Length: 398
Ligand SMILES: *Cc1c(COP(=O)(O)O)cnc(C)c1O
Image 1 (tube, rainbow, N blue to C red):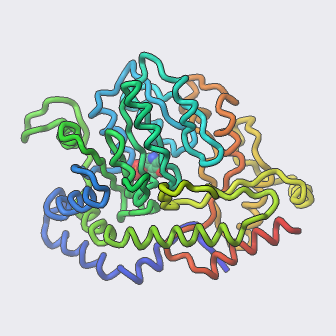
Image 2: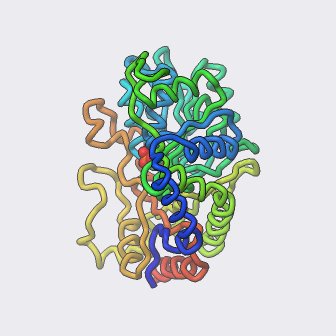
């Protein structure tokens, strides 16, 4: 059996025809930029997130940049965020001229450790940029109250968390701005790049709309330097077909996560994700990420594979050979897993000049060496899941 980490094939048999006709409708209309499809999507997405405004843009990365710019964050400013995320989270902060200040994660949920944020706040700190990583919403009640107390803004990176909520409120509706990605592998994927910014603040919404079209409030009248970052009509048409299905897809993801919990529970050397979710925490399971400890049982196989290529050739990170070996063995059995993320952002070569210190974020670095994402997407079958779990069991119980 071959199990891909992610696949759109089965989804196509369900909605392929609808997608075809939506795309053709746009092509025949001749309206490729803006128009009804974009307007309708922005309205429906705002409703889905329970916010007043949603503004489409070119990508999740652009959504972050637009949000930071709209909050006047730039050179001299610091933004507190996590190093255990996709690179774009910090890249956006740097690209507006500000400095990402990394705080370690809570190893129990892989999210920014709220207890550690306070000590990183200084007079240059302007905002906190939490990531609802893998679809797990961070405790926004605590975060919002801390930000209020310290006079800081919150930009939520919701790229992996469309469909997640905290205390009945959608992610992207609790901070000052929410940033979503419609990259095809996210919970709500377009047919290419796409993103959206959400906010309840009319001034921020207006500013983002202008920044996304060259800082242009009126045609050919430019009040500031902006970007060309729009959600195009074909992407919006695709998203209009898919958005109504999002709740169903999230339920599927949740069922798959529960099933993995049942199938893998109690295996020595494995740690399963977020087994103790708080009741108000609705997880959308964009990824199901396990941790592979260097346990003894697996040692024998390790010996046989001393030639195994390491994930992090550039750094002296305590890379878990067991994790890398499990990944390789699973691949040989047809189970494709992915490592999100093998290298923490603060140790990426691109950030060499900022001299972030290795071992300064022990939990983040540890996670990067141990995490493994199992196949998860709404159409993953029970048989495929059982095959994944049985393959893991066979390997670990050898
Ligand atoms: C995907 C992702 C982004 C960037 O989104 P793009 O649409 O690919 O630009 C930002 N942050 C996180 C956490 C992501 O997973």
